[in-house]
Image (cartoon, rainbow, N blue to C red):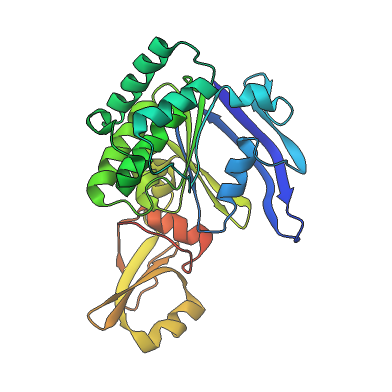
Length: 295
């Protein structure tokens, strides 16, 4: 399968241009869409999911015209939005049975087999009879993936799936998404750099509706080799360095600030080479003030 997004744009009635001439090509596997809150990630996801119209451009899933054949696309789509509601007094197996019925699984025995397999796949089988209102945040996210998998989708969209999860739940979620992404196009929209570096074979950085970078995490880091330098400075000297150097990030340590700068050569003044990482790539493209988590 191949998802081709070509020259896609979307402006809301209030004048905000949420998507600006976005073009991307995605194939089977995990694709990360990395950007700060408000960058346009959710707007792009909603447009791909046929939940809102685009002003211009096209989206094709193989030969399927996504923007014109909405019903056909939805039959192939699994979608986990950033925020999704659950009926708190209904059990997981009851809710999945209901969703499976809505997706056309008519026979009760077939639905039962499907629901049990899905709950087992997301490690919720032993909690299948518990009310959804009693689930932890991580359990709800895993339930969300289970409902997104009904119908064997060819395209799965997950929007900020690990935000708010503790490290153990995040690792479980990583393993689950990695397994799903082996034979499916999975778009992972996130502002968490670790999500992309851990899961995604390819990614794009988006900000203010524009794609600023696309490639593999390894390629992105390799491009920064030999160009990253750092040192600790007093806080009051930060403006001077920002005025003369490209400071990509700062971190307060023991009363001083450790700054990381990108430069074609060592800027001197005590700077030492540092190993680049995907966070450096992100900050170089988006800016130091971006909302980002690395955990």
